[in-house]
Amino acid sequence: MKVDYIIVGLGLAGLAFSRELEKHNKSYVVYEDNSQQSSIVAGGMYNPVILKRFTPVWSAIEQLEIAIPFYKALERDFQKKYIYDVDIYRVFKSVEEQNNWFVACDKPLLSQYMIPEIELNKYEGVESDFGFGKLIDTGRIDTKELINDYRDYLLNKNIIRKDKFIYKSLKINDIGVEYDDVKASKVVFCEGFGLVKNPFFNYLPMQEAKGELLIIHAPNLNVDFMIKASVFVMPLGDNYFKVGATFNWKDKTTLPTDSGKKELIEKLETVINVSYKIVDHVAGIRPTVKDRRPLVGKHPKYHSLAILNGLGTRGVMIAPKSSKELYNYLENDIELSKEISISRF
Ligand SMILES: Cc1cc2nc3c(=O)[nH]c(=O)nc-3n(C[C@H](O)[C@H](O)[C@H](O)COP(=O)(O)OP(=O)(O)OC[C@H]3O[C@@H](n4cnc5c(N)ncnc54)[C@H](O)[C@@H]3O)c2cc1C
Image (cartoon, rainbow, N blue to C red):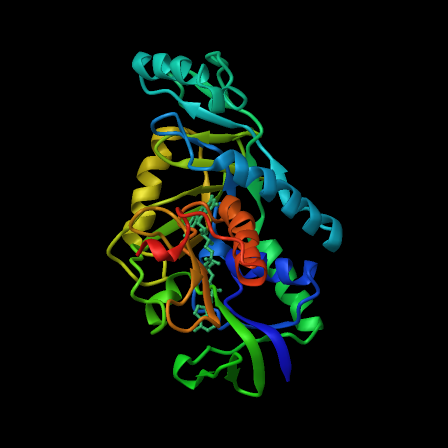
């Protein structure tokens, strides 16, 4: 079998690069072994404001300009809903935070998202002594549904193999690579935290961060916005909510833990005061990088090997733009922006 590309990993990175290949009529095959879960369990939120400090997220506006049409096109192609426009209500902890909110609302990049008012409405079940700051044009992507649908689409086309990619079986030659029965011009590695097992790219400084989330059912919590306090409480419909997430820099396993659950429950109970039932508990490892920027580029020695990784805590916004840049770099020799290029390491 001869193809233009092999993609290793079908999380948000692999999916975004596959869309780029389809757009340009390139042939490819995907290897996916279900060893990582980050994109499947993700909150899926997109939001251009860092809600701890009220500062803009790196390159957020440019990322969103590409990301929203990207997910809309997927909705159109698959005739499914993946984008949920949901406002974020940031719970204030003090008068000082209220003041900081107003200062940030005046900043050019933030003013289109942050409403310069304090929302003092009380919502049943939500603790809010100092009110809320409201963010608009934010939302979430149903990443689990999207990835499952995309995997089925690739299965139908017979271009996904549910196998672990074995690095030592990859043969690199002058015109490309060979793996199994596949000959390809290039391989793009999109393994998320799986990168640490990749002998070609594991020199890159990943600083992974495990995250856990709860799904709860709270019949008396009737909010249709995301609450951001010590945790996020994200409406999923029918009084189900995602609650998260934890950050653990030591635990490298993908399994949910009792300590993660305890932490989430303790935090949740400072945010809501109505009864709820935990219906699920999930975990994944965020592929975060030392300098908090993506890892994109070609191997310094083997130019048929490329990487799209390091999406960190914001894969939803970063994946579509980074995959476009990688494609243009590999196919059209358009230089990568310095911030994302792996040549910085
Ligand atoms: C709890 C939690 C909450 C999050 N919330 C948000 C959020 O609200 N918004 C947001 O934008 N981001 C969020 N993120 C971050 C986001 O999930 C990541 O940025 C993104 O999923 C990374 O995508 P990826 O494709 O690089 O990696 P992954 O999703 O990990 O995908 C990598 C894929 O490669 C496969 N793989 C690895 N090695 C091999 C191999 N050798 N052979 C074959 N297949 C292989 C894995 O099985 C996996 O499917 C969250 C993450 C977590 C854990």
